[in-house]
Length: 61
Ligand SMILES: [Zn+2]
Image (cartoon, rainbow, N blue to C red; front, side, top):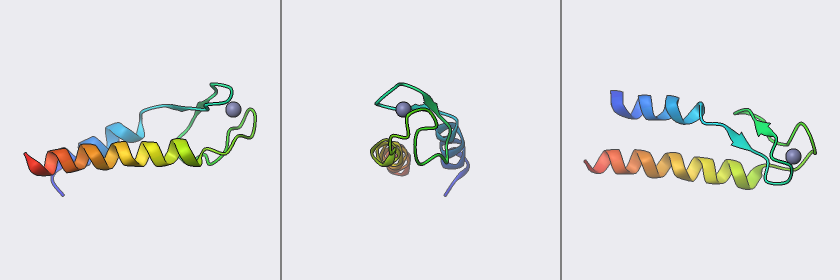
């Protein structure tokens, strides 16, 4: 874990997710949509995968 990776994590947590049912903006830490109640498991998984991909890329360089 280096300084660059820590920054990537912090930047990634500030990226806004949105509900794929109604488009409501989701805050990090919400597990279902505050507007329509849609479960956000898939979005959170994608978000986590993106973050891991970024971190893996920075590990290689
Ligand atoms: Zn929604």
